[in-house]
Image (cartoon, rainbow, N blue to C red; front, side, top):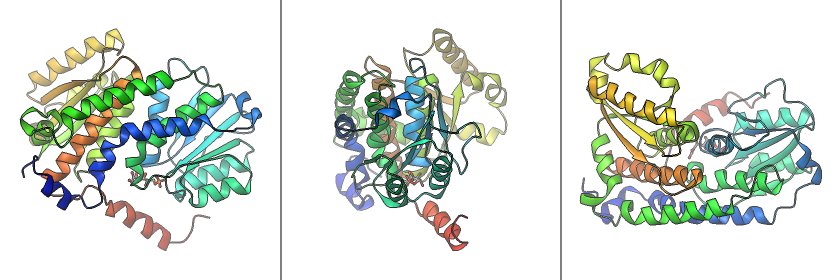
Length: 357
Ligand code: F6R
């Protein structure tokens, strides 16, 4: 497979995943602008806890937001990926934001419905579906966006809409400058890693080639932990390829002990360390020592640094890079990056067994 052949790309990518990956910077800008005109009830600014609901490509925005604002937002943020809300989520002190691209994901509908029954302050972020209908029935605000794509390819919306929404409620500072910086950093990097940049100098194409036939294990720390999660899911869904992620420093207390066995797994594992010069100083030391251990056990490992100044730029630049890697790996796997047949199969099989009660 020649990763410099645009004809092959268009044959293997009829759904246009590559174009959507390239649109991430514009998506972020459009999402931020969309939140600027939001008119939300004043009572919403008095909440004491934020709860973000979603699954898969619609959950990752919440996880990224949680990582980004952890050190500066004084309100607790909980991410729920499942059917049930924690018991403590009760009443109007809780802002519960249901995030679902389709608006029809049963876990998100279930936990959102529970929130409504418990009198929380609800918001829906969606393109429509049952979630929008459920919110509208209760006169709850709906942040409606339109972007024709697989949910995971609408990350600019699912992440930046949350950031803008919480800023509009005065729960977060104004991230406008960070969003703009991140967009510029992504656009600049795109020139180096996009499809037009030849393999010989294209770090994303070269990494995809090294990952071909290997088991990618992605490491991230702190605000980049959810970015490692995003890489893993993009490699699963776009490249149709096994991948896992681990979080530093936690992995220093367990995973490091199991680097060598089974030997066949060790020989096929390729660790990717997503680093930032904004990582905690002790975490920076841990990265170096972790790498020493990997080298010592002969596990293939390499690191990539987030670009730009702000945490948001570091996150989005590494996400953009990882999205391209997942696309090129799909090409090497001879896989159409868009459809996710197994997810659709699961949703159909569950629906065959009846609606959730
Ligand atoms: C598909 C994808 C999935 C979906 C998930 C939830 O591209 O990424 O992980 O995001 O099945 O569906 P939505 O996003 O419609 O709530």
